[in-house]
Image (cartoon, rainbow, N blue to C red; front, side, top):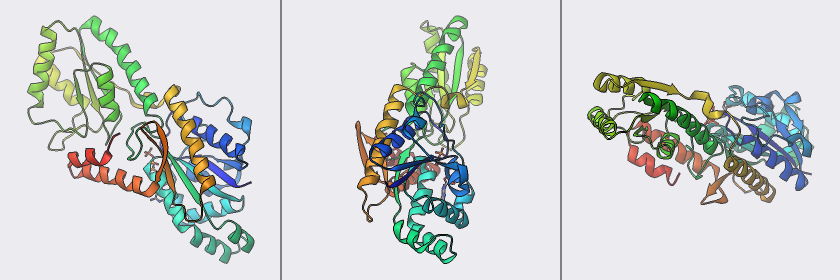
Length: 363
Ligand code: ATP
C-alpha cells in the first residue's frame, strides 16, 4: 500500500482529533500504510518514535477529545534546509509520499515549500548516500493535502476552519455564565476573546449573546466611539436593562490603529458612567473542552476528502487544501488560499480594512 502520514502543526484546535481519526481510517480503508507523525514538523525532522504506524484502533475514543492527541509544535528546524533534508530522509526510508497536514497558513506554507523542493532534497540525500537509487526513483513524487485547523476562522477559501465552532461554544457558555451574575449586580461585563487579525469569534459571539457592543480589528471605531458607547449603555440602563455586555477582540483598534483593549473600555465606562465594570479574559479556555458536533463532523469529512484527494493525485496534481464551501467539501489550490490569507493580513497591516474583508470573502 501507499505510505501516508498525518500530522498536526501550529496552534491546536478542537476537531483536529476527528480529522486525524478520519485520515487514519480512510487511509487504511483504501489500502494505505498510515503513519502518525507526532509533534508536527519537529517529529518529522527528528524521526525515530515520532513516526509511528497507526492502526484502526489507535484512533478509537479520540473524537470527543479537544486538542490533538498526536501533539503539535512550532519547529525552527523545518525552516532550515538541513531540517527539511532530515525530514525527507525520514519519510523516504519509511516509504511515505503522501502527507495530510492539519494546521494554519504557516504549516501549509511549509508543506508547499517541502513539496517544491522534494526532488532536490532527494537528489542531495542520494548524493550523500542517505537514501538508495531505488528509493530515489520509487518515492520521487510527494503529494500533499492540507486541512485548516484554527479557532479564529481566519483562512481564505473555507467557510469554517476546524475548531471555530467549538471555540464559539466556549465563549457563549462563558457569557451565559457571566450574564446571570451581571444581572444580579447590575454590572457591565467586558469580555476579551481571541482574534488578533480576525474578528469572527467576537462578532458571532456578540450576535449570539445580545452584546451591546463589539470591537473587532476589521471595523476600527471612529474617534467619537467613547461618546457613542456611553450614550448607548446609558440609554439601555435607563430603559430598564440591568446589565451590559461588551465583547472585545484581541486585535481591536481605532481608526488610527491604536489598540482598543478591554482595560481601555473599562476605564471609559467607569470614568464616564461610574458603572460597576468587570473584565473577563477568556484566553486558552476558548481552545479547551470537547469539540462540538459540528467540528467533529467537519474534521471527519475533511479528513476523508483529503485522503481521497491524495489517492487520486497524479504527478502533476498541485497540493490542495480541503475546504468547506456552502456545506460541500471541496479541494482548492493550497498556495492560492495561503496567498489570499497573507494578502488579508497585509491589507490589515496597511489599514485597508475594506480590502481585507473583500479578500476574505464569505467566511
Ligand atoms: P497558527 O494559525 O496556529 O499560527 P500556523 O500553522 O500558521 O498555525 P506557524 O507557527 O506559522 O503556525 O507554523 C507552524 C510551523 O510550520 C512552523 O513552526 C514551521 O515549522 C513551519 N513553517 C511555517 N512557515 C514555514 C516556511 N515558510 N517554511 C518552512 N516551514 C514553515
